Each structure stands twice: as structure tokens, then as C-alpha cells.
Image (cartoon, rainbow, N blue to C red):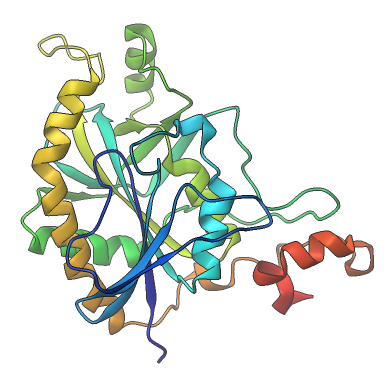
Length: 287
């Protein structure tokens, strides 16, 4: 069994991982341009870990401006097999409180400005997203969070909105009628691209607020989000540290590892040479 490489994409408030040993800083270019920032690679609990700050150092890149394809492609370049997203989120449920952690298993996508696929420009591929999260990684992440002392929930629906504004009250109440669990702005594109890159992907959502639907709570604002985040980032970092040894002892038997096996529909002889070269890291073994 080969030693796995765990990737971590840190969202708002989660800009580093404590305890990385043998730290390397790696700047990459990809066929899709530059990622959000420098990648940091090291060892955590004996496992190899790669970290990227989603919004860049200083939190300078808005959700709609993120180069999702470069971020995921860069993780693939660095040998990542398991990818964990740490994201802040608003609760859409009375019983899901600020300070809770949720590992969702489903998405609803309300974004409309963002590239969503590595495919196109003469190459067509269709992967399944019926179950967009890796169940094995999600289970391990939930267990790691519980061991780290987080109030963890496994399973739920993550609603991804375009942003950068938070919801109107009418939107918030509409989304609640859809029985979603949390609302945030970034993980849907990562999940789509991670599946195309054959990475196992899971989200650890740090609940910070009640959006603006709750009649007894203030509407969401960035100061309250950051306050709750700061209280929970250390717990999230401990969870990542506890996740690493769990994945050392596992092998990938999920569908994520071969998601592209039957996904490419384009006649191999008609795939543009440049596209084939750009995506060789993802599709080369199937051509």
C-alpha cells in the first residue's frame, strides 16, 4: 500500500496548519493558470500533507474569482489523493448551531459565474456526481473531528451560492424550504473538479451563523463569522492532524479513484493535441 498524500484547502480563517514538519513551499503553474497561493508541503502525524489557502494569504481572492481548476490541478500535480476542504458556513437549521461542524454528503449549486469542469474545447467527459463526496473520506473526517473535540455531524446538504454578498431574507427562507443544512460559497466547484481529477473529496464545514432567516438572531455579518471561526480553527486543525494517521492505514476502494474510466466520450483520434497534453495528468492513463 503506497503512502497517501492528503491535501487540505483552508477557507476563511483557516490559513495554515500547525505542526507541519519538514515544510516546503511550492509555487506551481498549471495549464489553467496560477493557483490561489503557494502550496505548503510537509508531514503531519507521519502522513504527507499539502496545504493551500483558498483565498490566498491576506484573504484577497473572492469566491467568484478563485481559480478552482488551478487549485485542484495543483493538488493533483503534488500527488494528492485525499482532499479536504475546510469552509465556513451558515446554518439553515434550528438544531445546527454556530460552533458545530458538519461533513455534508450532498450539494445544491446556485453559482453561475465559474468554470465547472476540466473538459471542453474539443474534449467531452461526463463524470457521475450523484454522490459528490467520498463516503470513506467523509467517515474518516467525521471520526477525526469527534476525536478532536468538535461537535460533528455527518451528512447533510451544502447549498453553494455565488456571493460575495450574503442572502436576502427572502432567499434564506426559500433555501430553508429546500431542506438544506448549510449555506456557503466555495465547495461545489471543488467537488466537481476533484471528481474529474479522481481525488477523494470531503468538506468540513465550520458553522458560524444562522444566515439571516432566524428571527431571534442577528443577520450574518463578517465580524460574527470571524469571531466564531477564530474559536474553532484550532479544533479544525486538530481534526486534520487526527485524520492523517487514519488514512495512512487505508486504501482507496471508492468510486473516486477511477471516476474517469468510462467518462470520456470524445473519439480519441479527434481530441486536440494541446488539450490532451494539458490534461495528460488526469486522462493520460485512459488514452
